[in-house]
Image 1 (cartoon, rainbow, N blue to C red):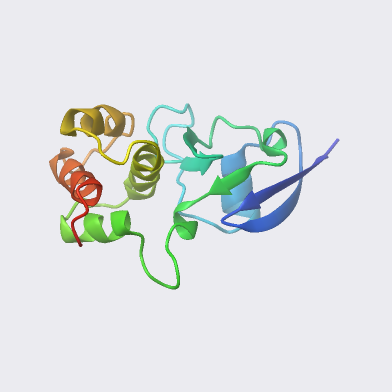
Image 2: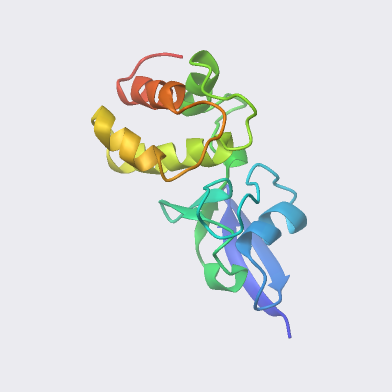
Length: 156
């Protein structure tokens, strides 16, 4: 038995017919065609599927689509404006914070949700938050540099 769910994704009203056990990650990728969020571990531990729901960075593999009724979701595809990259995306490029890129969308959205709440963090606070997302390529230093650059208002 399918459930009708109404929600916003990247500022657009959406409606989905979902089975009660369908994950938000599945709906975002398969039904909406937004492939920035990746399925990594499927257990909410790696951060590759991170999206922002009502301002909070959340692993979309753990969220049932039926539970997002009336909520606002932001994916990596929705953070830039007027055809321009978001400052975090620009900083990831400038600071070479991506290698394979698999984790980058989740990293960027985790950083965005954090900086939206705490625009003037310490480096230690950024490190603590970013360690919730796994990266097997970069060693995190370039990621931390990129996030701190945005927090400090540096242009990419």
